[in-house]
Length: 193
Image (cartoon, rainbow, N blue to C red; front, side, top):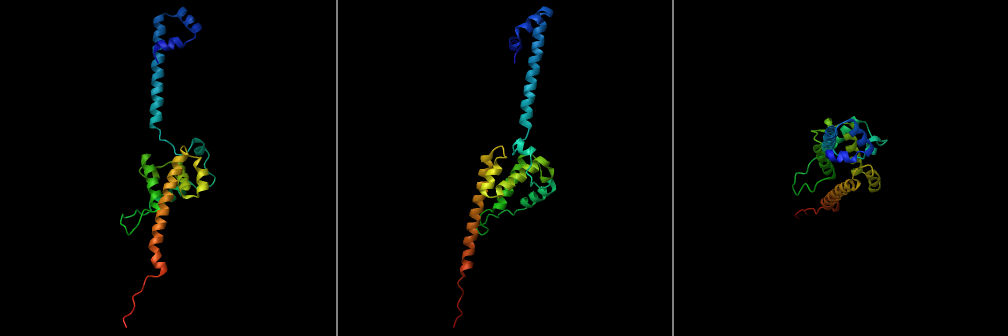
């Protein structure tokens, strides 16, 4: 904001009183200081917003945790169990990724995006966000729709849930196909007579 704009925005009465008491040079100097201060405050606000990590949950949800939310210690334990999900080895025999591993990848990527090295470094607000996200991903579809409204981007978290659910369906189909010959009984070798 330039000093001229500040002088234009001041009410005429204020300008008239100021001109009677001080010189135009002082008015321009004061307007310059005000404009520099305004610019610096604006830059500071933008920098602060850029440095702030984007929340998963809305501010209302963060201020009003779910009634059934466990303690921070219990959430950490549950998240550590999630992060222990075994990664597929990539072989055809081991099959496609499991939903548990997909959830692990989601949690790992979010924690990494926050710049945290591990779950122990997360504060209560971040733990709440991860717990609510994990709850949404692992619950029934109707409940997930309700929970999604607590998130800043409900459609994104529902798409994430749908993706993990698709991974789970693919894994179940693989496991069912692999178990099918065992259920029907594998042909047994006949003894030579």
